[in-house]
Image 1 (cartoon, rainbow, N blue to C red):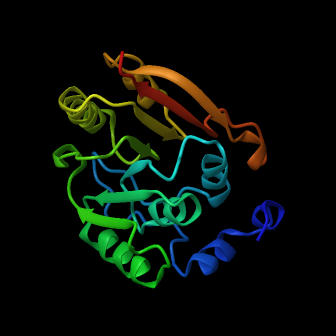
Image 2: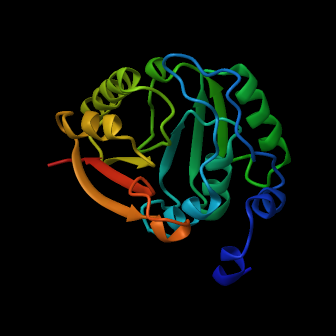
Length: 205
């Protein structure tokens, strides 16, 4: 299937292509620090896959992975290894069920774990779609920074549809520098400035 064929696929078509079920919003486990499940649009993921920031050798971690769409899509389209974590056991069970049906099950793993407790290993690319509040985000970046100090490497944070609070948090974090932006506004009606992926990096001098 070529790129023009891909661009015509609907959300449901992509789920069918990947043999998974990830569509729809779910706010059943929303609380003061964790936001509802809402999958990243496939058109946005397609732009990310075509951006060159995700390579076969990338090790991607999706925070608040929900039903596993980001991990399964990126591993399927880019050939990279991905890990998805979520505090919700219900979501991780759904992600595992999706993974069992997918063709990239050897590249993906899911874990039920609070984001602020996850211990990084080889990951170098971290994806966020507003999964939690800036309070949790500060703790998460602290863990990412600790991993970076222990094993210096180029690290990137990819933040889709960021809130003002999320951006302010990222802009004030030491060692974290704004690198680039993937503009996604043309994928949707209107001109919503939040339709973008902000890219921040920790670099090795």
